[in-house]
Image 1 (tube, rainbow, N blue to C red):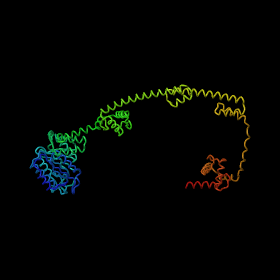
Image 2: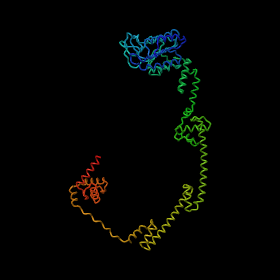
Image 3: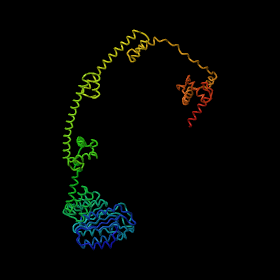
Image 4: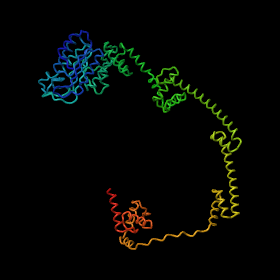
Length: 547
């Protein structure tokens, strides 16, 4: 914001002579020729802080040297005409120094040097002298921008180590953002300047730094406009921290009661009430179990209150004529626990009654089926009550019945074998195997049948084909090694033929496979490898490799 001097002077003249506290805020960050004064733009944050506390603020940013002098002249006129109980000056940007003084450089400053410094910037000693006109207290905040500038011959960048500070004026130095934080702290009623400087190590002070006397008294109240704006900001944020910040600045403000009511609302919000209970994971699981006992689906008992649990809580609250917040109070947790305990007792009584009825039905069915002891009745009982009261007894009796059946079958098996052995004929043993295929004496029966059957003469073997001596000699001439023979067997198997084991031994099966390969390649079928077959097998191997 670049303020035109004529407009500024007109505004000053239009202000009624009633100001008690006045401030000047200038932040020069962007320059025409000098480098950017990093961070100086944060000075604008001081404007709203001062206005909120009832200060009349003259402010501008990125001002030329002439505009800054016009601003300072306006401050001087206001103090001289109306008086000022307190004065705050906040300057941020490029500072230049020499033995004769210190200047805040304007945005139109060049590297003209010491000779033209008064035309390039705002003299700090003049600022301090005007600030000293305050009736009660005056604080000058100086934020020197980071980085070094070059302002010409005779000028050095930054602020001097010590300033000639007039009586009654306090000077605070630091980064601009830290200065804004310090100003915020100072504007809290009842806060001395020394406390602000001591608590913020990024700040340093000199001159009048009161230790006990607050800058603003405890009973300081700001203008209604500042009060309303601060309250509106707190209401827009609508957080506990925002309302507390408002009340810290305006404890007796016009909207203090509304702020305290909002704080009460936030602090008594259902989620905050439940949060203050600090429920453990196990306690949350217990709540989920209680809801489940009462028939509400929490979608798991994991100690995590997600949408499922919140929905279950809301349903429980609705059925108990409570606000459906989805969050629990301590009293609601106790009520829920009591209902769950009552319901658990009811469920246990219902389960006992159900078990008694099931047991009665079990005993009645046993009396009508398994108690008689027959196999059909016992199996009928187990089909209906596999884990019933009498299931073990039923299985024992069925096992005894099965044992008796096996004993009877064995007696009949022995009797049948004795009859077959007494007859001792081929037909008798064959009849035993037919009637008792799994009998105890089947091996003996088969042995005796084999002994009584006539021995058949061996089947005539086909004559071996004559050996092709010439083909055999041709194979021997190749001098095939064992690895080569194994490779031939592998190639024969690859062709879908069956050469037998790939062991480098050409047996009868291998000879048949060789003859089949010779037929496939239109060679004479001898069953012996010759150079032509070997060439065909190897060329086929290379063809597969390159394919």
